[in-house]
Image (cartoon, rainbow, N blue to C red):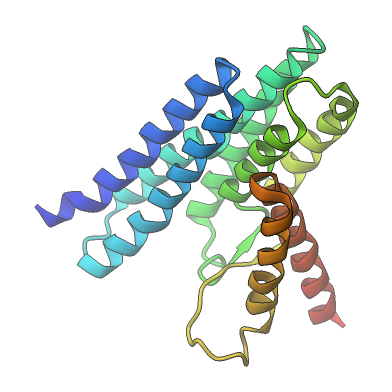
Length: 221
C-alpha cells in the first residue's frame, strides 16, 4: 500500500497543473497561480515521502517529470498565452515554446547526475512561479509589459536549459557555515514577500537567479 503513496501525491501535482491550465485559459490568473503553488507543494513532498518510505522507483521518477511538465511547463505557458492574446493574435503562440523547453529541461534533469545537491539551469517550478506571479501582479490589461514578456520568454527558455549552476534549498546541516547563500536568500525573501505580496514571488525568483549567477562567478575566481 505504502508504495503507492508517493505516486498518488505526484498525481495530485498533475491534477493541480490541469486545473491551473483550465483556469489560465478562462483568464483566472490568480487562481491558476494558486494551483501552480499547490502543485509545487505536492512536488516537494512526493520525493521526500518516497525517500522516507524507501519506495523510490523508476516509474515514480518518470511520473514526476510528466506531472511537472503539465504544472510547471504547460500551465504557465497557458497563463502567458491568455495574457498575450489580449494584445495580439499571433505572437501569443510563442508562449508554448516555453512549454517545450520546460519538457527538455525535465528530460535533461532525469539524465544529469550532477544535479543531486543543486541545479544546472533554472528549475521548472521556479520558472512557473515567476511567470504566474508576474502576470498576476501586472494585471490582465497591462500592454506596456507585453514587449518585456516576449523577451522574457526567450530568456526563460535559455535559462531552463543553460549550464548555469543554481543552488537548491537542500541542507545537510542546519548551521550557518556552508549554508550562507541559502540563509541569505531565505532572509531576504521575507521583506520582498511582505512588501509585494503574491507578486513578490516573481521578484524572489529573479533574485534567486541573480544570486546563483553571482555565486557561480565568485566560485570561479
